[in-house]
Image (cartoon, rainbow, N blue to C red; front, side):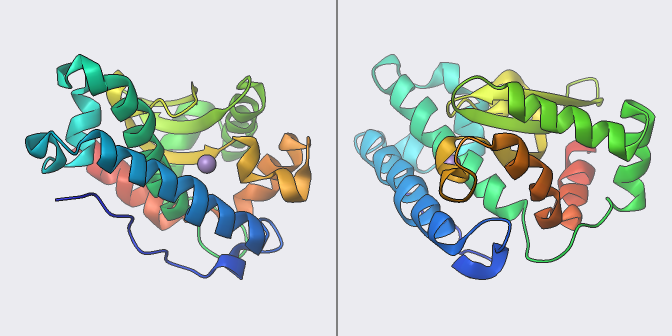
Length: 204
Ligand code: MN
């Protein structure tokens, strides 16, 4: 059993003008697909792991045999993080979170605008490659944080709600070095129904 990429919910050009079609195509068909290929290669001789849900493998990364642990961390994280990133977006205009998630955001961060500012800052200050996240911690509190490379919040005991990819490959064709512009434009693409669903599931 090999892992597969979930089908894209939209076409390559659907996220324009915020993210151009060429960036989405390369990001999905080259970067994401390569993580998938390398994950399947790493698990070739580990049929039990290859048959496990990817989430479970990343939660229990310390149980993965040492000789493939780094490959699984990088490529399993690369597959999972990108799955979440594509699912976090949809074509359209900026909307507010639904009332259930919005209330939690306001309670935790003061307001939706303060939340957005802190989230953008997490993405902007992530040195090098990585992601900015809204996650639920084990105390069921919302937190904003960032991760390096393809590290996955699941491995740190967190439940991811919303993610933005801040690797240069996610924005460089359109924005070059202007990561801040990509982050502020990105809100137009957020699928808040997906985030709210993840939040509800994470609370269970
Ligand atoms: Mn990426």
